[in-house]
Image (cartoon, rainbow, N blue to C red; front, top):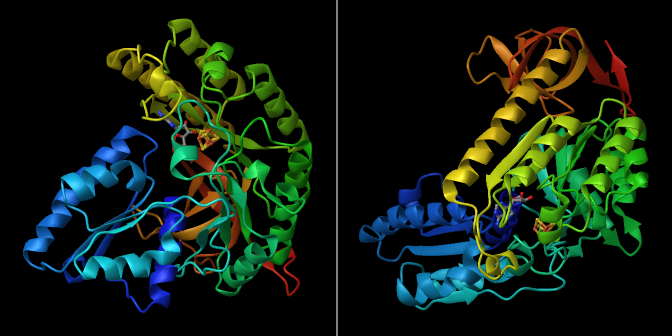
Length: 435
Ligand code: 5AD
Ligand code: SF4
């Protein structure tokens, strides 16, 4: 989400005549786009700011600014007390960034932290380097108010971008040769543009160019509809991959988290999705050590992991966030217990990932080739539509951006290794033909 926002900011600043430098010592303005979702993200920013501020000794006119979710929270501390930042602009005020930068150039503090109910940056063309993979925000904000989460406070109320502007952006990406687009929102399942829901949006997006793979994140288990599952099943351009955060396997904890679903409801969706979309994969988010979490609650989380058998998981220790409902609950799971439970969750996920990868040996998978493998230019690296990395030997007929069918020969918990069966081409009408 922040990467996509940074591209919006770059789009706005480029329009105003700014250029990007990859050498920080040459910059007149340095902006850090920040995340508040967990405390360690915030701590990292303090470290970075320390380093950047030393550049002011060389260039006293350097403007240093904070963008994103930390803006509101840290305005007082960074601008007024520590005075180490010249401007602070929150996620809904990027349009006015050139104005705030000028204020800062004139020696004053540029501060824009108001949240909006309508801003979607619909008409802004994000600045993206050429490549295969693009992020595209389809909505902003969140109305869910999970009790642990700071997002509804830092990013404001939920609002959807217009279908028209999304389609026009996807057309541009298609003409520039992008091959994978990930639609982003805190809760994409509640996308709504005057009655166009998320499933309708996916159909419209995949119809622009069926040779572009479409991914999306994040889905909330309460709002994931049957219509969406059937839509994924029916359209080959939509990846058979759903990121569906569970957070905890215990109904008592889910209720305290205000997640608004039970684990039975969650597992029911998983079962339905597996029936409707053959070969579908899931990933999830899990929090360990939420207030009052017992060992039994923790075991229920491990149980859910064993039932669903996720392809991947983002796993976190609970981090109290000021202003949230959970912040008022006692953070009573000791740090070492949180860490131990988190490690058990990570170990189990690694074991499941390894076993699931082993099951793929001998299977034929379609991958999008992304370039040379990180370790050797004798190998290419690609991804399956379920987001698994596959390494194949280089081949004179295969280039970055090609779709290739491969047979999986061997695996580790993180990587698959395969051999090429055939390349997939797209004809004039963008219909896949094997060659
Ligand atoms: N502590 C730990 N993890 C959190 N997340 C959100 N807020 C917190 C918090 N306070 C995690 C959730 C969410 C993901 C984006 O970050 O798992 O799905
Ligand atoms: Fe936060 Fe919950 Fe909204 Fe996700 S759905 S952004 S966890 S409030």
